[in-house]
Length: 473
Image 1 (cartoon, rainbow, N blue to C red):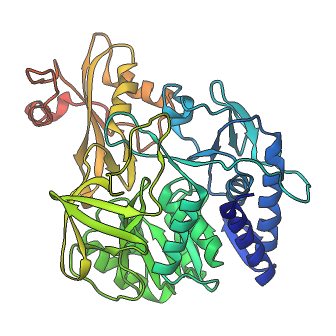
Image 2 (cartoon, helix red, strand yellow; image 1 turned 120 degrees about the vertical axis):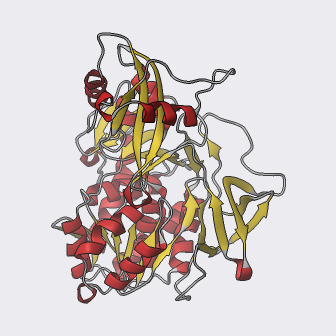
Image 3 (cartoon, one colour; image 1 turned 120 degrees about the horizontal axis):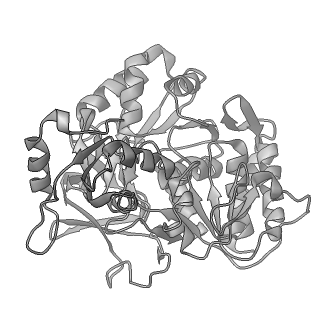
């Protein structure tokens, strides 16, 4: 068994020996001790030998069993691709999840997807003294897709654990902390900064099976000391939080720009600053405001995270880090420059004392409450609806710096916007993926090269009366 798998197993064992009856994971009303989590993860690792040979897709929900399954499969060296519960990528057989060689999907209910055989969490439990050895697997996570369809970023367990240790170091996480995870554990921020960072630091973990303001408040009032959220989460919590409710010492925000005014209000209610973290699935944590600092220049996303080198070349942010991904599943193109730097695609500048200021971000995705929606994929799915002749999907500004998914469509009679919306729901798109509004147009404005003009679409939509726009959800 390779050193990185042994390290993960070591952390699980060390936490069990330090505090066997102490809480490791809380999910709803279920509390699991470190001894129970250790035994459950190793049972999964042993039971993984029953899986068919090849990569598997894992539905990582917000349950204790879901966490134990992910940890156990990582210990076993199985290549896993993580997705959220009810992810539309599973039902979309044209998505990358059905094209990288997966042989099964492991989920709470064991329902298969297309050609992928279904396995339940509890199917992977063997009372075996020692998990079988074998070659090391990889951890694959969906990216928003900077160009074209979303892709699967490949990384090693070693880089994932290195990323977890970076969070531990930057934010001084210890076994006395209780980490509240309000973001999905299938995402890089949730998995690396939440689940794995808690394991390597010995901190207990609060999971929300379904995000709710009430659930987050319950965790905060019960003593959570560290919180991972998106700007939307902080905006939802701020009106109902009171300083006396919180023992929070570290609050982290990722998934989009955090407005200074929102950060100030949330800090006042939580009793601690809200620290924006900057990173990506491909790179892990890039920049942050570590626990050792209490204030920073307005607009800064932080200084280089532990083990990270930053530079700006021709206005573009580039990063060199030991947590850099291996590449995208099914692709062989190099991911870094000859001297080992990865181009994030974002633009920015480095200021005094190494503070990074972003001046522009990749705009190919739509940021819906911190969830990244790929417009090309949604456009492809809408284009499969009978009666849709042409479609263009884009992000529309919403309150609080958020975005909504809008779509301009050209329909062939008798198709209506209501038909398209019903089709979206039949394809089991996640609620945040379904277009908030459809805009039927006679045709899409295109350039001489055939490219849709975003500005011309906006002008065409604005020219039509609100009565002619349909499909509010």
